Image (cartoon, rainbow, N blue to C red):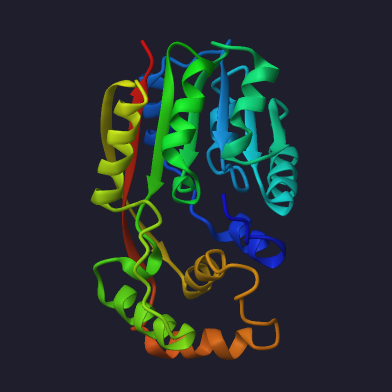
Length: 262
């Protein structure tokens, strides 16, 4: 997994990255029959957008991420919410075998990966995860909508043009959200031995203020490319001037791709 979301980027991530609507959490619980005896692994957990709402439905959650600042902020949020059954672990997808050795085989009900699989070697990861799951357990790959600058609306196209001009490059990476990405992941799950591979789609809409929009942009820029603190007001104003007037309606389609062990 590539690491580049430290420092202020992690702060923006914690504050502005959208969470997951309750139907997503309910779909995960139903698909893997999660209950109060279960352990869930949230791989690439970020600042806890999935780990924290899942914690109330299971015995414990292990939130694993390769970025210490993400875990620090996740822990602070958990403390603020009174959530005490999440363990935050510094690690990447390559560390899954060590987690399995620690927990033992057939001890995990679900591994959830939210908008982070594109940083991982997913084929190797899926194979490494298989021995961890209890009967009926498995993997859920959750994509929380396309990036802000790749959506099919006027404000998103204007945002993309401004960002491409600033960074001098085409912005085409879908971060694992495209239909092609999901097909690749589904095929890899099947090849690793997961059964009943299927996708559930959940749609919702939200309105973003400009502050929320620019905060979401900052949360996705690697730390070494984030405009300096003194340069950020001018950067933000340039983007603001390029966009139609807000608020900015965002139509989000969440993809929950799941495969179970038998």
